[in-house]
View 1 (cartoon, rainbow, N blue to C red):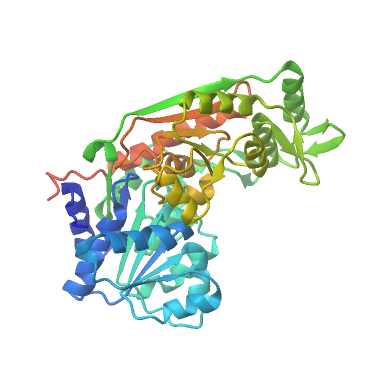
View 2: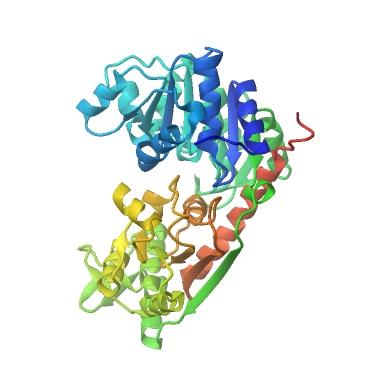
Length: 450
């Protein structure tokens, strides 16, 4: 297919070419893969500045999305690539193939660097979903940081750079610029820009930015960072956000409140308890959805309020395809038991969805939230169970609300009133504001910055 780029795509490709270190904060659906591959083509097969590129991405994106982009566009057809997934023998065989682009899933980065036995001889790295390297304690971060000094160019791509707040940015930019802008140590970054928020004696659970910290951080990273919102550059379809309230019966609500107040509950002969606040949060989310795991990980049924609401929504769709996002395994089991739905967990199931062959599909945000193009299969998304993760929330929504979608996108949230669901919705809105502030601070102005 002939590539006829939008102006913002040309600008972003040129930005990558001009900046050996680049943080590209592109809204979902703006085509970050083809933008980056266009730069890779010029660097490897035109100017010969780069010999070999490692692209790190979520598994499905590395296996399916990037190869599809490489096969799709005429102008990059000469780029040779190999997909480094599968068992160890298959991964090693892929690494030994001669190609300009090696695609690997992020879970195998530590293996590649420390266990493959092969030299890390890439002179350019592309990290698709840079936000997946936000933990400075993760093995993938430490492994990549170890080989980073030998890499000439690096590009970080994401639409959700600070999904859980500004603290996420340190590890991401430490990997990109090796500490030049936000410092080499997380402790110094923390003490410079944040003050303790929630704590218990000497144990600090969270931090809040100091006055002026946000602007200072944005200023420090602005020289290697650009951002763009889809609404600024594309004619996206209309988006309708809807909350569908459900209410528990008095007895169901009392069970919920007992769990919330006492952190322990006896339900249908099973004992359900929570060791700490984090575990309690998970139990309350489960109960809001209609079932909860006991100490033996057996799902104990509480109510069908959300299933009833889901049935109404599917019926109201009147045959139009519906995509359902679930969180807990017992959600999936109860949905599949009640509705003739299919999981989108294979390349074939995704193909069938986009071909209009599946009327009710189910996805888990953690496995299908990044990089998958699902807009051809439908325009209605229903959140059966909510997530605290702004990144997964936004990325999952963007599977349908993106370039190429022909219809108005409707996103329903089934919210159990008087439960933790309402707090999750509030938290997502607050996190979204922080992230929007960051994106606006480094927003690309195509006219002024050329």
